[in-house]
Length: 174
Image 1 (cartoon, helix red, strand yellow):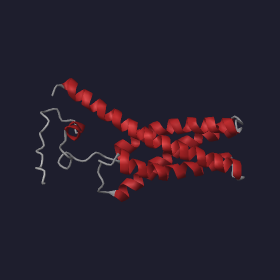
Image 2 (cartoon, one colour):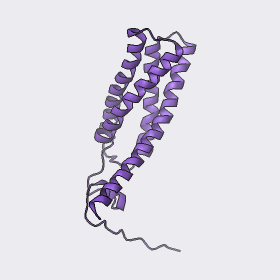
Image 3 (cartoon, one colour):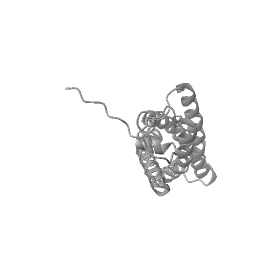
Image 4 (cartoon, rainbow, N blue to C red):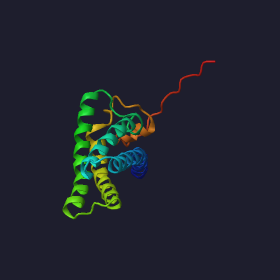
């Protein structure tokens, strides 16, 4: 396979990963914003504290989506390590997200319902960039080459450029 073909295959795989990450994140956004608005409108919990609580509900929702859909083909051997790193990096993302809301609310006094929603979404967007990088790099690691399934996609995901191996098909029993 040519270098151009390998690059194209890598970009295709990255595009699929980004799309899956985005789909899970979109559902997480709905959960986050729904819980935030529910807390803001029905309780006396301060805006930033309620926003942070909603973020943690969405983090739990997102873990399930990332582990069992977006990164289901990644290493599953160290669940304790994976969950610890996921919570650590999600916490950093929560600080980024809540920091934007905190700055808008207490730094500029922008705390109307519309403004709170705008700055909550802005914070989520900035934190999402950090989360995507950290989850794919540290949390949901790719399998080592000897453990990976040798499909054309898995082969190219490893960065190998030689001929893609042919996988023998098993005969169908009737």
